[in-house]
Amino acid sequence: MIDSLVTFVVNLSGGSAALGIVLFTLAVRLMLLPLNVRRDRAMKIRERLAPKLRELQKRHARNPERLSGEMSALFAKEGTSPFAGYLPMLAQLPFMWLMYRVATHPTALVGHDLFGAPLGQQVAGVVANYGLVSMPVLVFVMVIALVAAVAWLSARNIKVGEDQPQWLRRLLPWMPYGSVLATLVLPLAGALYLLVSTAWAAGERAVLASRPL
Image (cartoon, rainbow, N blue to C red; front, side, top):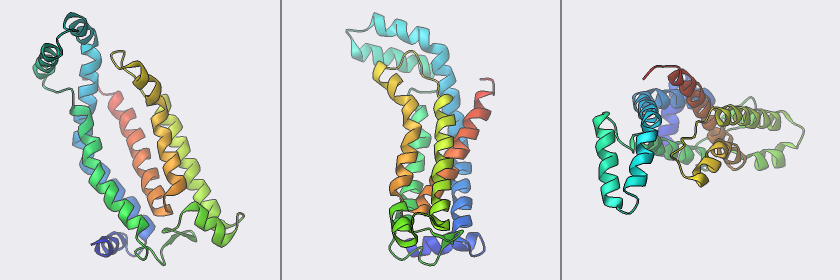
């Protein structure tokens, strides 16, 4: 299955696995766009309903079942649900798993590279095989730097609702940097997938944020 997927990705780009990963990632993000539009709408509705949600939480603090029912009814009246924001994340998981399997398959990416950097190797392996000062290492460093830049932009644009728990409000601004940590342990193919996916997500959020509800 994995070998077949690699063949498909490579054929998608006319023989370049790196370009195939980019095109595959863009196709996945495009398929998820309708769900992300729904998520953005749900988030804007939640922000608008924040005062009413806080009022319900105070009124039914001792009755969790009544609180859950009242909140669900409030969201249903607006044509959404409290869980609408999680759909895009869950929908992307199968594609992330497939790409991870491709990137970590022992033979799938043999012979495929990005400007001389093997797509199937992690940064530690690239350093060990080519030396710290080499073109393959520079390619990996550039990808990591770009992922870090996208994470920084994403962290700056995160909006934390006042109705969110205190621990979540502190954690959310740091979550985009998880992609940077991932690039340090994933093969270059996985890092490239993360770069394209997070860059798309950052641009998508910026466009959707400017749209009226």
